Length: 311
Image (tube, rainbow, N blue to C red; front, side):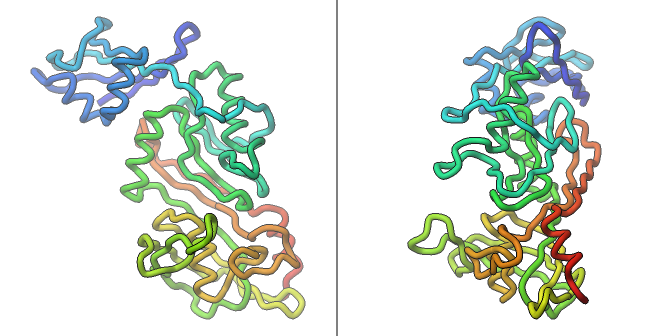
């Protein structure tokens, strides 16, 4: 199988190229092996895409021969309704034709909300794509809470989002976080496996509850210290699932809420947001399968807490 990204100045539609490996195989079956979704095929058929074999347009019932060159041209994407195009600064860690990895600051939403309708990462990414001439919208692969800083990944096309979604379901995208929590965490390493669900009578808040969704977080102690008379612990966390507020809920459930996380029992005396940062992101490239690994330094506000600490 051969993936080649085809982009040119005339046609900005996202195009992938493959080489047929089997004689007598239906194009439909080959497309399934190449992980082109049924939803994508419907969009290609009705919304302005195209399937060609050796540069001749064909339908999915076409019979392939070994060595045939198959091009899949996806239709132009419409940005989500209500997602305003805005222009602003993005801290880009990595970019190619398929994905964009950013370092998100604290106090910035990943996607717009009723409370914060503008200046989200998604708004700015749409503006950035417009400047690039990309007929695409922002597809968030790994989302961060508004007050959480660090690495997040965005797919540049719906098909790439589909592929990263498959990888996430297989737990092939790995994220590690660092946090500063209240109290001294006793065990140097532990796994928290506790189901998380929505708290009754709250739209935002989550809690550990028996009827919640399976959730698994690994916690490793990096440093125990005190800030004045306040004991704190610097921890590294590995997410095995991606539930809403998972780290915040699990650490609060453990009796060690994140410093600054007043929603789950933390204090904002030392920092004006939950002290949580995504420090590493590992994944295989969705098209080439090349291993990718990205890291990010802690935000200055968290570094300050560690500098001011005493062991």
